[in-house]
Length: 489
Ligand code: GLN
Image (cartoon, rainbow, N blue to C red; front, side):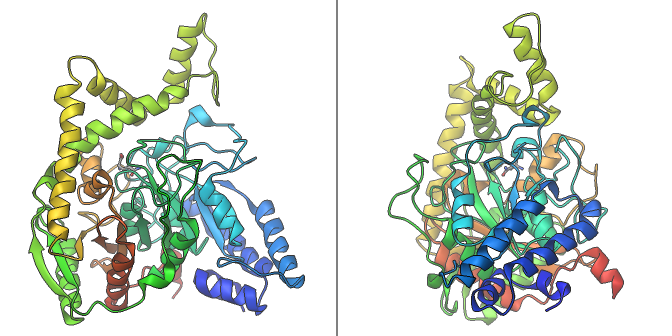
């Protein structure tokens, strides 16, 4: 097996090969580390690489096999972790200056579960600072580039994770999705990205942005791989009080066709799409029909207020969550003449402009006199959105839309905050409702840039969501290839 073959391999195939002894975990990890060394100076997906630890962990997997012990579902599979997940002993920054140098004393539950299944963490990936953004340009360190076209953004905020999978640095990666941060970069990089039902995956060890919306999920190059990863990371965790007991996702349950399934295309999400995205959505509808699904348009009226409600609720929660970064307990501390000045200097220098904007927005929305009119009203809209989705799901098994209204854009293309916020119009409503949704690569535009289709399902509807995603994947005639590989040919 050559290095080139290893980096194209799926997680399912890697784990099977390592378990059977067809090849070793060390060979797999070495091939991926070489790929990172060859191309990450261009992509810049990683904030921190974990090469030595990864090789050590790979050797441990191989030794376990040599001793005849049982290997897990992800034996020897390299995984890239968004740098807002704690990993004991490894710097965790949220791509913010305020956390530079912070070494967590504990590991996120999701990471523990991945490692228990034999997966090998190979590095921490870049993000928009504190996961606020849609392009990874808000990272305090450097922007990540889209492997499919290096002049374009990978999306965000989990841009480094999406890019690492698209660049073949790892077959799978982990991200977090508060308003679209897994699905939108997945769409822009031509990979699969899943936001599970709220509470299905533990948030313990995920540095909080907006706790009532944040959810961790996988990136992969196939629907099957993403389903397997969700199986591994889902399930109750007593260390996260919002984690649901008695619920986990079963990878085996997502097999089967879509004959007779009722698919609704969300009317409110058909406006404002670029021509190429519109065309891809129309093709997706055609494909689903030809495979026997019953496809219709359906209105989810309150969805059009999603963006507005989100930009009150998410900043409000962020303003509270980010209060802990005060120069006393974590990371950066800029000394002032007294405590107040120390807070001011630390937060003034430690946070970037977008994070400050959110803190101010959120503090305003929560302030006495505005609370009811802003935050309170946004919470009511949130309920309306959930109700409208429920009404739609009484007639449809799943809903679909485009994931992002456009393909990957160029750097500095969206200088005003609102145009950046618009990247998430189609993804935000699922977070507000707490429902699962995923993006599956479906088509390329005339320049070969990836376009993803979003599949949405009611709470715990992951199995039917994956079925529809698999059908779209099977019908897709497009596969995203890194820029260097397409020019080599
Ligand atoms: N782009 C959205 C934001 O900036 C969503 C981010 C996310 O899901 N973390 O808030």
